Every structure is written in C-alpha cells, then in structure tokens.
Image (cartoon, rainbow over all chains, first blue to last red; front, side, top):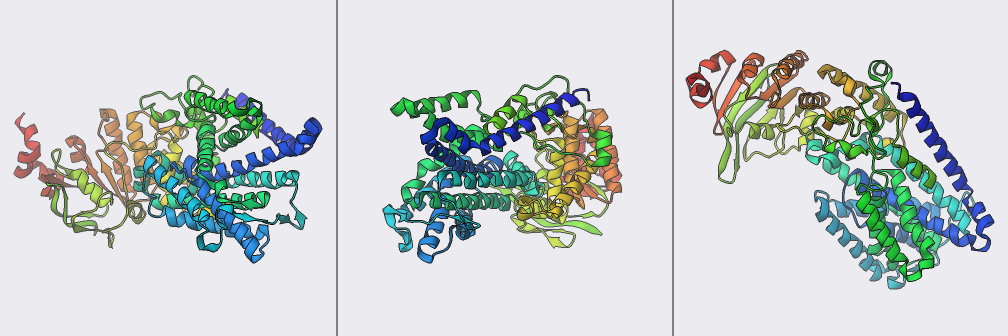
Length: 384
Length: 255
C-alpha cells in the first residue's frame, strides 16, 4: 500500500499533462500562424491529414487491435463512405452532414456482406482476402460501377459541410471539425473497449476457442467489430470527400490500407494513445523530412524498421484494463498486494503470457487499480 | 429427474471409433464421474456435450433441449459450462477479467449501449464485477483479482477456470480432469470445492484419473472403454464390478 501514493500522483500528473497537451493543441492554428506565418495553412492542412488518418486508424484499431483480426483493406470502407457522400451530395443534393449516417451505413453494410463468408478465417488468410476487397472496390470505382462513380476521373465539385449553418471551408475550420471527430472517436471507442462488447473482442483475440466455450458468440462479435470499424471509416470518408471536394479511385488504393495498418501496428495495436502517436509519426514525419527530398521515404522506412525491432509490440503496447471494485470488495481486496519488484517502464499487458510459472512481477502492476506505465504515457500525453 | 441424457451417441475420427453408441443419463444434483483408461473416449464425450465437435449420430438432450447443431456459446447459455483438460485461461488478462468472460453470456448490454455508455450498461458493469468477485471468493481467489491469470500457481489456475465456468451460471458443470497436476493438498481443497458446488444445486460431471478423488466425490460413475460404456453405478458397486476391474482398476488390484 505504501506505493499507492506516488502511483496516484503519477497518474494525476499524466492526466494534467494530457489535458495541457490537448489545450495547447486546440490553439495549434493560432500558434502555427504566429510561428511560421504564411505557410501556416499548409501545416494546418498537414495536421488535418493526420487527424483524418487518426480517425481511420482508431476505427481500424477496433478490428485489428481489439479483435485481433488482420484486416488490410480498410481503405475500401473509407472509399465507400467518401463515394456515398459524393453521390448523395452531387446527384441528390443532400447536405454533407446529412450524408454522414448514410456513408456509415453504406460502409457498414458492405463490411457485413464481405465479412460474412470470411470472418472465420485466421491471421494471414484473412489478410489476403481483405487485400482483395480493397482492390475489388478500387477497380469497381474505376470502372464507373452503376454509372455513379465517374470512372477513373472520380467525382468533382463536392460541397463543403455546414455545421449549424457555419460553413466549414478553410483549413482551420476543418482542423476543429476533424479533431473534434477524433476526440469523439477516442471517447466512443474507449467506452466500447471497456464494455461487455470490448471485453468479448479481447477474449477472442486471446483465445477464440476458449472464448466460444465460455459463452462468447465469437463469430457474431467479430462480425460486429468489423462492421463498426468499417462504418466509422465511412464517416471519415464523408469528411475526406468534403475536404478534398474531388475524389477519385486513386485516393483509396492498397497503399492507403497498408499505411493505416502500419499506423496501428507501429503505434501499438489496442492502445488508442499508441494509435494517435502512430498517426503523427506515419503521416506527420514524412512532411518534416521534406528537406531530405527523394530520400525522405528511405529515412522513414529505416525508422520504421528500427522501431519494429526494438518495440515489436508497438510504441505503446496495449495495457490491461483497470477496474474499480464496488464498495464491499474494495475494503477487503481493494489495494491488492503490491508484488515484489517493480516492472519495467514498458511492462505491457501481454507480459503475463510466458510467465506460466510463478513470476508475479511481469504485468501485475498494469493490471492493478492505480498506476500507469510511466514512460509510455508521458509520450502519449505530449503527442495528443 | 435426468438433467442430461445421451442416446446412442457416436463419433468417429477417420477409422477410429472414439465414441460408439453411448447411451446414459445424468441425474440432477449428482456428481457424476466419467472414468476409463486413456483413449476410452471420455474427453470426446465432453466435447460432444459442450458442442465443441458435432456427433456423427445420436442425440444429446439437456433440460428438455436437444443440443443438436448448437454452437458452444449457445450451449453455455442453456446452462452447461466446462473446464479444459489442458488449462485454457486467458493468461494475459487479469483474474477478474477471466471470470468476467464467464459472465458475458448472462449480460444484456449490446453494442449501442456500450458505445454510448448508457446508464443501464453502467449499472450492469457494476453488478457484473460484484458477481465475478463473489465467484472468486467462492473458489478462494478473490485476493488475487488483479493478477494476470498466467502467473497464478497451477492449482490456482485450475480453480480460476472453475470460477470462470461458474460465472456462466451453469446448471451442469463439466470438469475435464480437475485434479490433474494438483498436489495432495490442492486435491483435498478441490474435493471440498466440488462439494460446495453441488450444494449450490449445480450438477457436476467430471473426468478424473485420481481414483481416491473419484470414489470420494462422486455419487455415480460411468465407465468407458474403447468408446463404449461398460458399466455404471455408485462407486462402491463399480469398485467391485469385474468388468471394470479387468478394464481399468485391475492394474491396481494386482499390486
């Protein structure tokens, strides 16, 4: 129990740091204008791209991070959302915001249809099929499917969104629009993760057979995770379409899917902070490396390789969920027994896997009520 | 009243007949032992009951329901929970979360109420932690609630698996070699635990090789050899059954 006070202090500190980071970030457009003047719109636009990819990566994280399904075709659902918005807006005159639920529905529906026959596939088999999905969608769009998608040239002249009558036009407008949606994603998916549904996905990821045999509808939950992730990617598609005003099949090719996959794996699958950090690194760093010109992707690739060697679980590995015991239990077992020896800074939630013997130290503290992995969280707070 | 009945249950793997037309019943409230030499088909019977594998022929009825074609998670929600011969906990998750996995099938919150954290969902979350802690206390593991399951000592892992199964609120609990790998002390505790489970009006069916344990704990024994049921009855009767002695216990009697 003696260790409890500094632990709680550390947690409060991290929270304060995160809050400060969010406040500073909220003023990023002003700060950028003061700092770099004329090129500020460009940098705000970079942040908008990062935000959009953060939203997409967070939705992929439900499928890849929480349910553990190797899905490398997320751009397909992003595309369906974007095209749904574009078609409804251009052909039927819907406002952008009103197309958002339709985009989510269309992407979710496609996900349900394509995932139904493949949901039982495991690991690399699923990966290959999902790559197929993104290619099929791209080729269908290129071939002007149903005469609606405008073929290889795509669709032009999509309207800007209006939120409560306020037109979202400039990069700084989109900045607040997109990052509000990112914050909403974080909140919704955080709640989802720490619920009956989210736990079911975790059980499936850990051991599908055991999960099924203890009463979890594994097929149903995997399918629902797929649909939820896809629907949210569809919402991101709406934002993308109205931000770009022009969309074409090339915006949604396989490499976009790989990029999203990379963000989640690199950042730390299952950990939202990790995913956000991953988006900044994967989408933001190449912009900072522009001075390397042609070599920037080489530098970036090398950085990826190095990080995956030293942090194979991702930059911020997923951690065990925290629980607060109800009153009578808390008095009896609340503190738990602090294990002998402190875990390392990155004593990730999966540490217990190999510790079949008697080693309590591995991940105990992470499972516990109070403390956070120190190094990792500071990094996350600073980035967000 | 029979809670479970098997009728001419058959399962073959390629040329091997693992279960050959087994017909038997389990009385409600009893502790029933399924015994027999290695390879007799005991675990296959358990896998058929819990829906892990489909039978080639025959029927299983549980509390008035046919289990034919039902997936394992459906069978769990009907009221049959199991443990595994080789422990299958979620080793990286905490002890509490492992038990929560058992509570899953008795919870109502769906996707939308979870995404939006509606009041009903939050109430259920509090209730379910309470429920899981009760089961942990029942098996004596409440103090370790936040430890990763994989780092528990072996005997505790076995008991945690039982707590997880009990969290599904079963009417029939199916234990595959619960005393396997336990020391004498742990086996003694397990004996008391099975008694306590039975006192909760949960029918128990178990496979076990520890004959001392089986004779003490069980009300009724089913004996299998080469996929067929060769004898059944109370332990005292089985102990003297010549067919059983020949097939199985005979090895001990000779010494």
